[in-house]
Image (cartoon, rainbow, N blue to C red; front, side, top):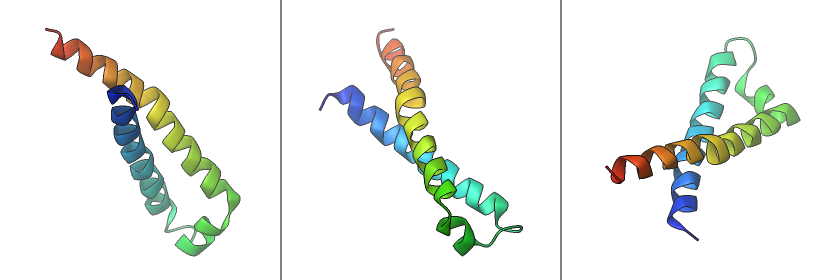
Length: 71
């Protein structure tokens, strides 16, 4: 696996998990944790956050990192 993909998975995965946890905590006053985790919507949103984190955020941060290293 290339260094780019390792970097993208690491940074994007962390961001995706963080956003999932943040959304659960944000809604915890209205909807209990166990109810949130029991719905398929939770897993769809979690997968979307991790996917966007890896493919979009990870890509742009990798480009920025490479550009900064080449200076």
